[in-house]
Each structure stands twice: as C-alpha cells, then as structure tokens.
Image (cartoon, rainbow, N blue to C red; front, top):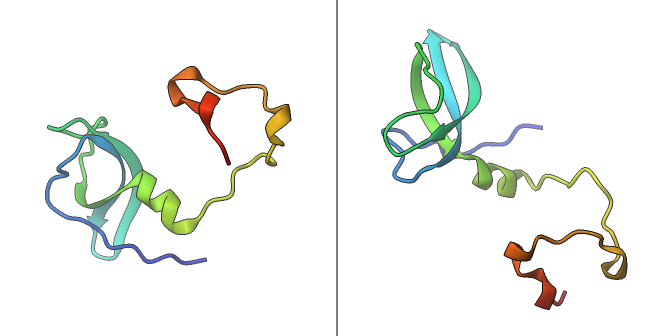
Length: 90
C-alpha cells in the first residue's frame, strides 16, 4: 500500500508529533517520528530533516483500524473522565 501525503517544509507552526523525512544523501533517507516542541525536534538528527507531516493527520488519511475489536456499549470497562464520555451517545 502506498499513500501519498502533502509534505510540509520549513518549520512546524504547532507543537505536535510529526512524521519526518530525513535526507542522508542523493536518493537516500529514512522516516522517523519526532515531537516538535515549538523550537526544536525532541531528538537530535545530525542529518537533514527535509519535510514533516502531522502524525494524527497521517492516521486519519490511511484509516488505520484499531488493533482490538469494538466492545458493545454496555460492556465497556474503561472511559477516562477527562474524555467526557459519560454523556456520549453513539
């Protein structure tokens, strides 16, 4: 499966987790995930970070299936209160 994304270049505007493209040389490089804290990447990359893409947007675009089956509503055993799911209706 190949998924084309619109890579961003320059400096990220938002603090977030990104998929980054790191260039090693002509026709050579690799991908990594790194957090941008507003000033720098969370890891030091001696190589050239040439592009980035928000990780959450990547997951939306490729429609990743959750690794566990859906649990029927009456059988759910965990919902963090900070998510506000106590009043959630499907």
